[in-house]
Amino acid sequence: MAAGTNHREMDRPSDTPMESEESSLKKTPESFFTVNSHTGEKHGENASDQQLTKHSGDKPYMCGECGYRTADRSHLSRHMRTHTGEKPYKCDQCDYSAVQKSDLDLHLTKHTGDKPYMCGECGYRTAYRCTLTQHMKTHTGEKPYKCDQCDYSAARKQYLDKHLRGHTGDKPYMCGECGFRTVHKSYLSQHMRTHTGEKPYKCDQCDFSAAWKSNLDTHMKKHTGEKPYMCGECGYRTADRSSLSSHMRTHTGEKPYKCDQCDYSAAEKQYLKNHIRNHTGDKPYMCEECGYRTVNKSFLSQHMRTHTGEKPYKCDQCDYSAAQKVNLARHRTTHTGEKPYMCGECGYRAANKCNLSHHVKTHAIEKPYKCDHCDYSTAKKSSFDEHLTKHTGEKPYMCDKCGYRAAVRSTLSKHMRIHTGEKPYKCDQCDFSAAQKCSLDIHLTKHSGNKPYMCDKSSVDTGQLTGLTYPNI
Image 1 (cartoon, helix red, strand yellow):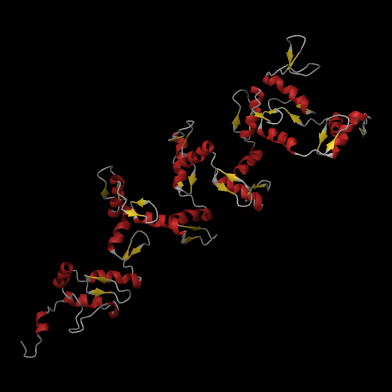
Image 2 (image 1 turned 135 degrees about the vertical axis):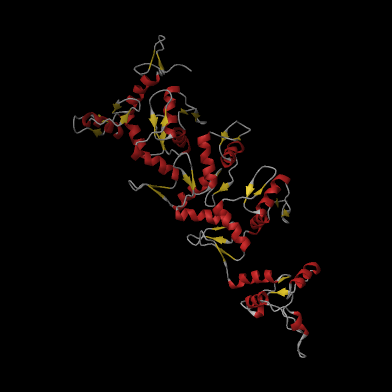
């Protein structure tokens, strides 16, 4: 050994691997490492030193960028990639790349479908150990993450983080297209599909597709007929929980969604959205056939049937069918004779709600025009003038075809149909049509079998009013 040989040089092996390791470290800026100020050596230069730091808790390797410390030089090397952006581990099946090999290994399971981690309780399998750990909490009921503002607790930290935004109002995720903001990144991803039109969830039994998995799950119950959610009040069953929640408000009367421009309130948020368009004038749903616009998507669906001729609502007592459910409900009253809607002021009864609504307005409206010959009063002067002709016998409206005269303009309009042949009142059960509504009403009794008019001299009843009186009820 030469006299001037340094002992440190004698102790250090001079093999190629050490030279290779030194050269690899030089690829990372020297400023990122802490160096022994006395010897000039980097801490933990050999494997035995690194092993000792694991027991001592010493973390001699520090990042000069952010202060991160570690006991292992290789960990610091991996960490440095978060600053440099280097991702040396490449997927050979797609353009994915990773900072760490373990991340690449996890990614590859998406291509292979490999799920090596299995739950011993229920057989659930996953590609990730951490996911299995989280899953196990569903069996143990463990919820270690507690909210410090309410009694909420969660099995996962990410759930708690999302929950806390409900207290802070923070919505960090924003759509660049329309400004929509949300508390959850996954909600933003779902929202973006409203712009792209993407519907990745496909039904394997029909051509239905959905933007959200929950919508597909609900749709699938149409095929299975499953309705797991039941109302404890009336036995109503439904395929999805949200529909049951909405239904329950029919029992409680709760209408939590309030309009800030009037006193309207609704049991469902969608009803409020539709209502608000009455204030804004917004009609986003348009028919491409004729340009018809509406505030409500369901109204557009109903309108489209005027083009397609579709009449999905069928009467189970005759061959009548309707494009809208409300029309079928009205039709059914011709079979039952039922008039369930009654006026609280005068006892007037109607077969449908809209007729009652029109009638009720006759009580609410002020009627300043009063007849001095009888107790008639009206809100309109034109109606009052027409009424007076009953007392005076005046008939100012004349037919220029035959000289027929009428006291009321509407009566003349009906008369004119004799000359024009117009019959606007159509029977929805056969091809009968009439010039006047009363004629159609009489005709409909042939289908319903209803005979409301009874002779007060005998037991004869009939469907037509020809000198007969109403029965005493």
